[in-house]
Amino acid sequence: MHTLRYFLFFCLLMLSGVRTVRAQSVDSDELFRQAREAAFDRKDYEKAKALCQQALTQSPNYADIRNFLGRLYTWEKKVAEANEQFTTVLKGQPQNREALVGLIDLNYWNDRPVQALTHANTALQFYTDDVEIRLKKVRVLDELRQYSEAYALALAVLKAAPANADARSLVERIKANASQNSVALSYDYLYFDKNYNDALHKAPWQVASLTYGRTTRLGSLAARVNYANRFSGTGFQAELDAYPRLSPTFYAYVSVGLSGDEPIFPRFRAGASLYANLPRSFEAEVGARYLKFSSPTWIYTASAGKYVSSFWINLRTYLIPGDHALSKTFIGTVRYYYGGADDYLGLSGGTGLSPDETRNVLLGETRQNLLSQRASAEFRKGLTSRDVLSLTASWYGEEQANRPRGSQWGVGVGYKKRF
Image (cartoon, rainbow, N blue to C red; front, side, top):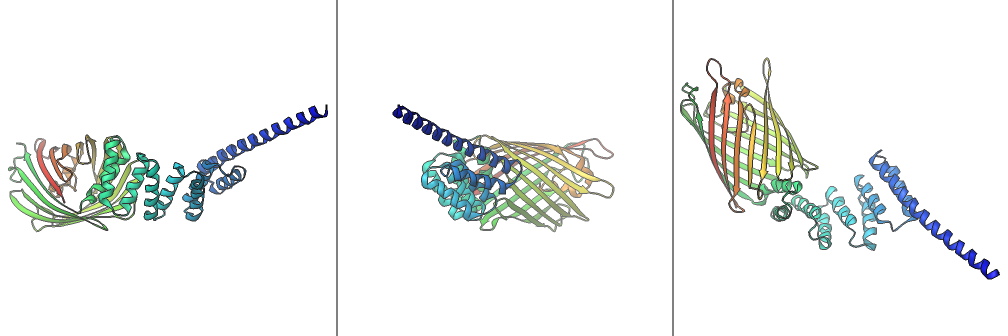
C-alpha cells in the first residue's frame, strides 16, 4: 500500500515538473511576443529589452530572443552589448544565420567595415549561395572602396537572381567605380521639320561630346568637351562633373561648365544635387541648376526612382521660377534590363526640356519652350565587360507663337570604353 502511495506521489511530482517546464516555455514565448510588440508597435526599446532579459532568465539558450535583443542594442548603436548577444548565440550555434547577419549589420552600420567583411566571409562559409548575405558583402566591399571585387560579386548575384532589385541597384551604383578610367564619345543629329522656317533652325543641329572619367577614393570625376553646330554657328563647351561619396547612403553631384560661344552654349552652367540610396531599392534626389546666357536662369529639380525586378522606374521634375509663373517640366523614364548592368532598353516621355541634356540649348532662347512635349528611346548593350554601345532616338513637339506647331527629331550614338 505504501509502495503504491510513493509511486503515485512520484508520478504527480514528475507531471508537475513537466507542467512547470511547459509553463516556463510558454512564458518565454509570451514575453518574446510582448517584446516585439513593444519594439515594433510602440518603439519602446527599453521595455522590449527588459522583456527579452526576463525571458532569457527563464530560457538562456533561446537564440531567437537573444538575437532580437542584439538587434535592439544595434538600433541603439550599443556595439559592445549587441556584440555580446550575437557572439553568445554563436558559441552554442556557430551556424546561426540570424546571429551571423546581425554581426555584419552591427559593424557595417557603425562604420566598422573591416570587421563586417570578416563576419560576411564567415557567414558565407556556411551559406555560400545566400543572396542576402552576398549582397551585404557587396555593400561592405563598396564601403571599403574595393570596387572591382564588389562589382564582380554583385554581377554574380545578379546573374544568379536576375529579378533581384537590390542586386540590380547595387550593380548600377558600383559599376562606375569598378574601373578607374573610362573614355566615352557621343554624337547627336537633330532635325527640325518645315515649320521651323527661321535661320536658327533651318539646318540640322549636330552635337558631339568626348568624356574622360576617373574614379578616386573620394568619388568619380569626369571631364568633358562638347562641340555643337547649331544656330548657324559652331562652338565648344568644357565641363567638369564630380560625384563625391558622402556616406553609404548619400552621395552628391557637382558640375560646372564654361563656354565663350553663346548662344551655342551658355556662358556658364553649374549644377548640384544630393542623392540618397534608400531601403527597398528606392533612390531620391534634390538639386538645382544654373544657366547663364544673356540673363541667368535658376532651375530646381527633384526625382525619385525605384528598381522593381528587371525594371528601373524614375520620375523627375524641373521647376523654373518666372516673373509671373512657374515653368514646370515632368519626365518619366522606364528601363528594362534584359541582361547585365549595361544591357537595357529605356523609354522616356513627358513635358518640357531638361537642362542636363547638352542638346537642350533651347532653354536659353525662351522659357516658353518648356511647354513642349517629348518622347525618347534608348538601347544600350555591353559588347564586353568594358565596352558599351548606346543608340538613342528622340522627338520634341513644341507649341510656337505665330506659326504652326514644330517638331524636332533626333538620333544619337555613343560608345564607352572602361580601362
